[in-house]
Amino acid sequence: MSGLLDGDISSVAEFLAHALEMEVESAERYRELADSMEVHHNPEVAALFRRLADEGDTHVEQVTRRVATIDLPNIAPW
Image 1 (cartoon, one colour):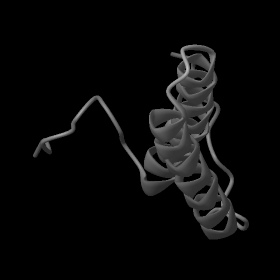
Image 2: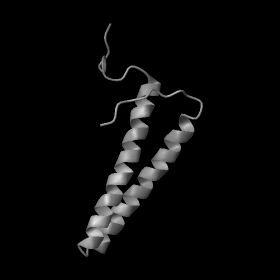
Image 3: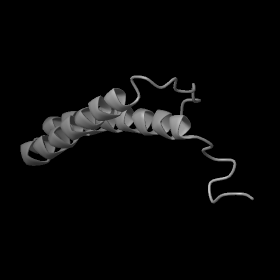
Image 4: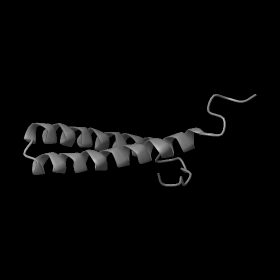
């Protein structure tokens, strides 16, 4: 019997590896957007993107704690 995600994500460890990578990547991109907004003299939006990056960092910490005892698979970069 095949699942909805058959062939995509086959384990909780694989799901968590993807979740961790996505959170790391999103925090980095939010910081880049914040830098860009500062260059374009838009401090309010820059602050928003920095806050989103900080939330991403928090999510990274949460997932990292969750996977501390799990051997995560190595996933290919985006």
